[in-house]
Image (tube, rainbow, N blue to C red):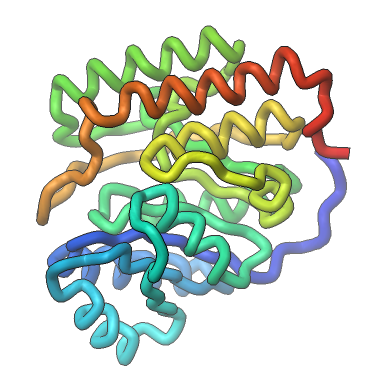
Length: 250
C-alpha cells in the first residue's frame, strides 16, 4: 500500500428514486452509526427523478440530521447517473455508495472507513465469504448474481466474488482516476470496481451483510441489464488486456 494523508470526510452517496418510505430509517441509521463511531461525514442523497414524496421527506429529515445533504439530479436519470451526480456534489476525500432501501449495514460502512484509513485505496465488501450474510435474497436473483460474479471473477482473475454489489468505498483519488464513467444504469456497480482494480489501485475485502428491503420495490430489472453489464465488462476487459497500461495510475 502506498502512503496516504489521513482522511478528513466520508461522503455517503445514496441514489434514491421513489424511496419515501425507506429513507427515514436508512438515513437515520447511517447517521447514528457514523456519529457513534466518530466518523466525520456527510450523507448525500440524490433524488433521481422521484414521483413520490422522496424530496419532501428529505427536506423533513434535513431538519433532524445535520449531516444530510439532499440534492436533485436535474439531468438524465438512471442509477449510474445519480451516483455520478452524487460524486460531483459531494466533498469528502473518501466516498461510499449505499442503497436507499436500508439493505446495506451502516456498521459495515464504518469498517470501510477504517480500511481506507489503514491505507487502502478501495474497500470492497462481500456477502459471500466467511462472516458475510444475506437475508431474504430472492432465489432467482441470487442465482443470477452468483453466475454473473463467477464469470467476472474468471474473466478478470479476481479474488473478489461480489463485484456487482454497489456497496463499496473508495478514496476520492480512485473516483477521479476512473473517470469518465460510461455506465448510466446499474452497470456502474461493475464499471467502478473493475476500473479501480485494472488501473492499479489497492483494495481490501471484508465480509458484509445484506438485508432485503422492507418498503417499495427493487429498481434493478435483470432483463434490462444483461447486455449493459456485458458491455461494461467487455470494455474494461479490453482495457485490462489491450491498453498496455495507458490508464493505470502513475
